[in-house]
Image (cartoon, rainbow, N blue to C red; front, top):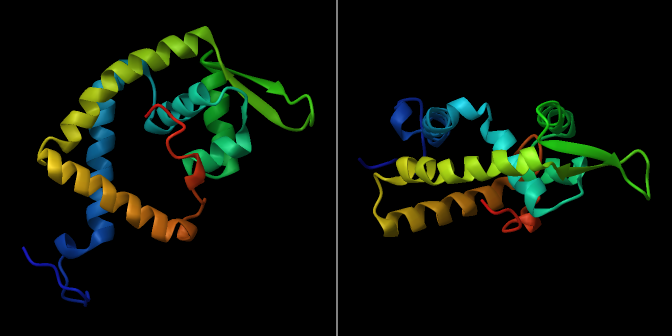
Amino acid sequence: MSVRATPDESTSLWERPGFLVRRLHQISVAIFIDEMGDLDITPVQFGALSIVAANPGIDQSALAGSLGIDRANVADVVARLSSAGHVTRKASVTDRRVKNIFMTPSGQEHLAEANRRFSKVHRRLLDPLSPAERDTFLKLLMRLIEQNNGLGRAVLNLERRGKSPN
């Protein structure tokens, strides 16, 4: 299939990057839920646990930037993880308004099991591609994110890349 450089009103859905990205996201979430279903964890919660594990004591604002979600949403994610017993929130010693987040032993166990299962999620999603195509695909995704990062509702803190185990 050839893709037109400039879309017009006759461009099919299958030539619209936004449609394709949204559809791939739906597939990715479906695979994630299929593999993680009984763990009662969402992709965003998995990302949050991964970031907290790699950055003990991270504050909610930094966590929001690392996940690329707004502060209100990250507060809800952290509240749910806290209610499940996976993280604790402690007031910062330097600023009592800031809450630092730490993993609990339950959270560490939960994340370890999710990490074991995630390799299958990753494999199932990218299996249709050759190893070289997977590498190219991920590099192109990162370039699109880097070049368009400021356009999202919440800006992703790209400087924290690589600081999470996933």
